[in-house]
Length: 418
Image (cartoon, rainbow, N blue to C red; front, side, top):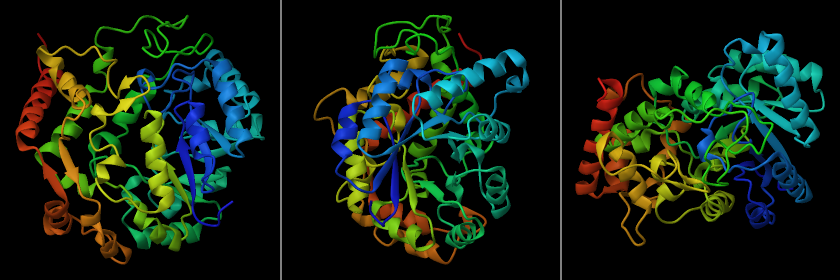
C-alpha cells in the first residue's frame, strides 16, 4: 500500500464502485451500514440503498477480495438509555454479532458505553470514533484512546486550526482522521447541539430482520417487515436542519468557503502535521459521482468546479435511491415546494448549475491557517469573504427563487401548519 495518507470511502453498496477504485492504492477502507438497524447511524434510511443482509455480506466479501477493510457504522450519538435495558441490549448484541459474523473489521461509534461493550464482547472488531463524538480537544482524544479506540475522526471545527491538529496528533498514539468532503455551515447550531445527528440516527433505527429496505424504499419497492409505515410528516424530519442550512448558504454565500471542506491539493498539509487518514462522505451518492470524487482526491488535484467534490447543497444530490431528502414525490405546490425546487436542480439535462466554485481560485486559501487559527469572531475578519468573491458565481434569479421557497418551508415547519 501507498505510504501517503489513506482514504476511507463511504460505500453505496454497489460492487461496481469497489471495482472502479480497486486500482487506487490510497483507498484502504470502505464504510457503510444497512438502512435500518437497532443502533442508528448518520443518514436517514431513505437515502441508503435497500440492501438485504445477504447482499451486504456479498458486498463486504467483495471489499475484502479487493484487499480493503470494511467498517460498519453504529454511530448514533445517543441510544436514549435504551442500551441499558435488557430487551434492547439483547437486540443490540444480536445486531453486533451479525456485524462481526459478516466480516466487519471495525465499527464507527460515538457512545463510550458502546465502545466498552464492544471491547468486551467483540474484541475482534476495532472501534473507531465518529465525528459525531465531537472530539475537539486533546483531552477528548486522550479519553477515547484510554477507552480503547483504534482511530478518532476529529470534529470539523478542528480542520483549519493547524496548531491544534499538530497538538492532537502528538498527544495520542492512535491514528487521527478528518472528513474532507464536509459542506456544513461553520459553527452550525444544529450540529454543535447534536440536534441534526440525533434526528438522522432516529431515522435509521428500526428492525433489521427482513430485507432491511426502509418502508416503501424506491430502491427495492418492498417494505420491511416489523416496521410501521412512515408517518405522513416523517419526510419532514430533517426539514428544519436542511432548510436552515441551505437558506443560510444562499443568503450568505461566504458560508460555502467557511465550511470545513479540505481540497485535494491541501491534503499534504494535514499529512505534514501527522494526520494520515481521510474520510470521504460518499455513501449516499450514485456510483459515477462517488468514483469521480475519490479519484480527484487520490490524484491530489481537481481542476474545475469544486462543488463537484463536496455537498454544498446536499438536498439536490442524486443518490442511488433518488435525492438526499424524500423519495422523489415532493409536490410542486404547498410547503414542500422547496424540496421539489431542489430536486429539479438535477432533473433537466443540461440545466446550468445553481452556482459555481472555481477550485483554482481557492489556491493558497489554506496557507493562512497553517500557523494562525481563525480569530474569535468572523466579524473581525474578511479573509474567507475575499476568497468567496473570487471563487463563487451564482445564478442570482434561481438563488432568489430557492431562498424564498426555503424560507417559506422553514416558516411552515416552525410556525402554525395548515
